[in-house]
Image (cartoon, rainbow, N blue to C red; front, top):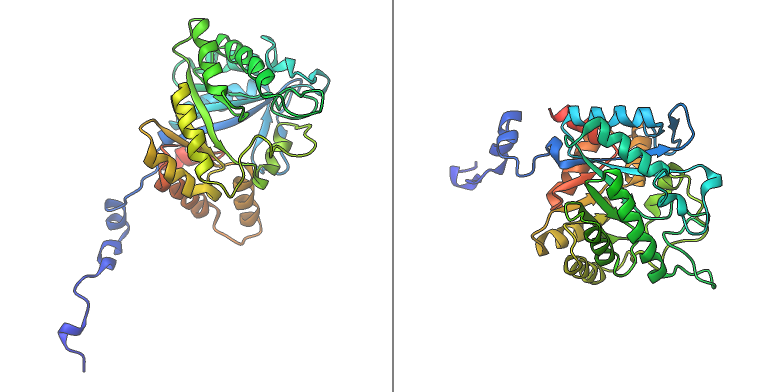
Length: 330
């Protein structure tokens, strides 16, 4: 027969006993303000175009993008990150549609700012891959390699036109060496010291980007391993972080999020600027596909994945579920 002394005196289960108890002692809480909604706007379409690999996500028209931005405001989301999808015939080797003041991304920035003003942070992807006919994030040299410094010239111009179009925040995502410093200088030269930079500081060459290629109509052949980071490297991420901070990044990001929670944690521990993580297309699609098969509880899986990202140290999360989850939390 057991004696009283043989039972545990400390019982962690007491703090898990009821929903109210679990809520009271929760160490990590999601909030609508944590979220940034990535959104795609496609030139020349009159109806939203569903993205087959990302159920529930579309390439917006200009009008439906404005509606999505207004809904994000209502849900309490902090920001919207815009990606432009130009007409195929407007793509060229230099990605000139990306710096055309009347290009789809700049038009969309003006539309969204007119719709939401300062109630939502209007952010713009600062990269050439959507606009180049070869699908790379920069211009190519005579040997077909991405030319880092020639690409920086294009990024500087892109930053200025995006700022002029109304971006509160620009997100340089091409992983060119020196991109943050060049973008900061370009913005300051036109008196736009107020425009913040969310640096895609740690961006791995990931298999999980697959559905995104459909979302932006990518023309990419090959891969981006010569400029995006190798998945096995952590110290490399911290080197990129130090450089981006030195060059003037206001916020830093890790992408993808879920497979790299250790990197999110390392970055968050090392800095005193806001840290974001991008829950990318493949992460989204896996949960949606498994839920469609009935293999997992969709809503619980979404919240669990997002909580894990925040627990790792991300202050803000780019997620295609931003508005949906924000409404649930409210």
